Image (tube, rainbow, N blue to C red; front, side):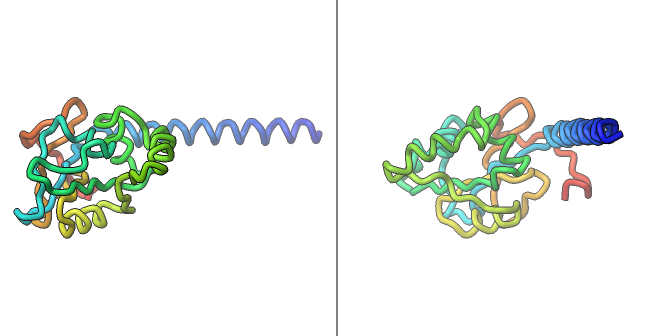
Length: 171
């Protein structure tokens, strides 16, 4: 009787885990279709001049200054945020988890990882108020405080505004 109960509990736990994985996979697939806006401050004097090919270098902290000598301040969403995962995979060709050893190695050389914020609203505020800041948010959340430089679609990084499908579920 005890063995039978233990087996039933184990089956239930495995089933619940499988359902959880399936639901998580579905949520990620839906979010993969969102367009990401790479943003800088809207105020002209604060916005850095950046070329699309430099974006990865900036977030890896291999390029620290813009063309005219302005210090660059990249900012990431927290490591579990779906947009951070998508941005990291497409731009940095890695995951936030795999970046930990890279940043640990650079720590002793005085190189700090990009600043991290907890939400897209915090990202907008930080970028809008920080000279040389560059970050990213869901393209449907762009407002007058920030200026989009590039758009990260599921297939490419572009400077041309793609077709956006914004509804209340993304807001």
